[in-house]
Structure formats: structure tokens, C-alpha cells
Image (tube, rainbow, N blue to C red; front, side, top):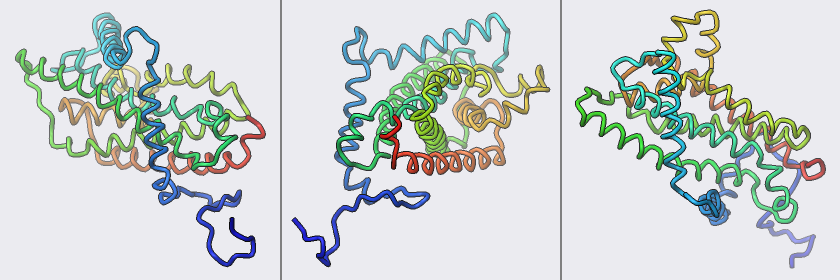
Length: 288
């Protein structure tokens, strides 16, 4: 053991005094084995002791897309242009699913892991990051379902093709991750004192899907409900969903102003969530 008066540098230093924005990549890299362990745990245990197991990764987006098609397209007669309604809905649900899983998964970080956080030290931000990476695995599976449905529709004779904006795909995934992670870390910090927020998360996401242009084109809400269209258009998630459909299906609207607005909003929300998360982790164990 080192003497307290040793002039040598300590390998690790745990202190409550931290920078306002502190994402120590070096420390996270040193704990990369723990990060991978959490990711593996999340993947293995999420559907453990269930009958269908990993098949839920396939069932959830398919049944949601079918429900949206029946309700919004067959009953409400919302048009989707030249794109088959099922494929239109499945594309939006695939993008929405990754965001909402990142958001809801990280929104209960402190309460769900209080037992671990109170016993051993590691960079707390590893826990929400591990959930985002885990959800990326799920997103890949659901994206494969979308690709299969896309190929089937094209094979049936429908004229569809992605456009040049497909090169923006990694940035859209990054924006979904930053937005979900930032909002989730913020809610997680507040739930240490206000537990009602954890109840409101599922309710809020159920409503948010209708204000994010997931089951309908943005052009339709502008046409039929111009008084509330600005709420949908100001929502960063709307631009992500619409941009995702635009690059995959070549339908809908896209603007660089909307893209940079969404990227800036996602980055700002992520940094804000990180600040609140770092501030809360210093003393959350006393209030959780």
C-alpha cells in the first residue's frame, strides 16, 4: 500500500469534485471489459425464462406495424403514397423503437442499479452506455426484418429504391442514441427524488409516438391539422423518423435545416443529460 505522503501519482482517484461536463473516455476504456459484460448480461437476461425468447425481437415490430396499418391506413385512410402502408409503418417503427428503447432503458439507471452503485466503484456512465449498445444489437435484428420486408415488396413489383441520403444512416443512428441517452439520463437523475417520473415515462412515450410522425407522413398533419403541425415539426424525433423513411423509401420530406436542427438538439440534450447525470451520481445513494 502507498504512503499518503508518497509523491507518486495514484492510478485511480475518486473525488466528488468533477468537471461540469466530464466524459472520461480513458477511464471508460479501462473499464471496457465491464462494459462488454453489462452488454452481454442485458442481451442474455432480457427475455430469459420467456417462452418465445429472442423471437420477441421480431414479433414486437411486426405486430405494431400491422396494428398501425389496420388503424391508421385501413380505418383512418391515411395515405402513404406509393409505399405500401405496412412497409411505411415498419420503417418508422424500426427507427422509433431504437430511440424509445434507449430512452426507457436508461431512464431508471440509478434506481435499478442502486445496489451495485452502493458497493463498488466504476464509471457510472458505463451503465446507460451499455444499454444503448445493447439496444443497438436489437436495432440490428429489427433492421434485418425491415430489409427482408423491403426485398419482398420490391420483388412483388413495387417500384422502390433508397436515395443518396442513405450515407447519413450512421448519423441518424447516432442522433437516436444521443437523444435517447440524454433524455434517459435526465429522467434517471430526477427519479432518485421524484419516483412518479418513472411511472410517467411509459405514459409519455405512448403519447410521444403520435407527436413524432411515426404512423403518418408529416405532410398529412400539415394538411389536416395545421394548428398543431408546428408541435410535430419542432419535435427532433419527427425529423429523425421522417429522414429515416426518406433515405430508405425515398418518400416524404427532407431538409438540411431540419437535419442540422435535429443533430444540434440531440447533441445539446445529450450534454445536458450528462451534466445532470454527473451531478446526481455524487450523492444519489443518499436519496434513492
